[in-house]
Image (cartoon, rainbow, N blue to C red; front, side, top):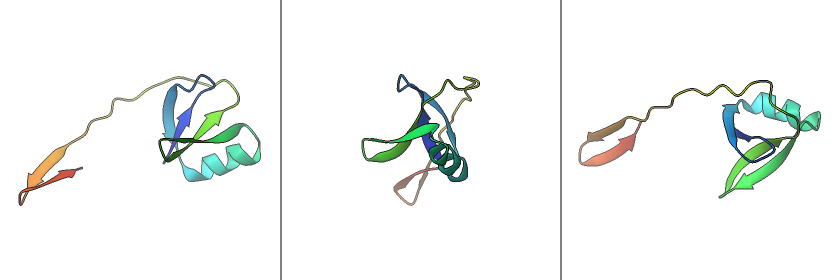
Length: 68
């Protein structure tokens, strides 16, 4: 999954690598690196701005921490 930003650099829902390649080939997005992470910036207005809640679970086993 690749992070997606709008024109104002506000985060949107991530999309698949295949969709990113298609958007870059059509020149509907530009590559962007944020803190060493590859992202894309859409050059057009997104069709929707729906957001999903994200949950992070942390499991402590054998005295090590894991992010699930």
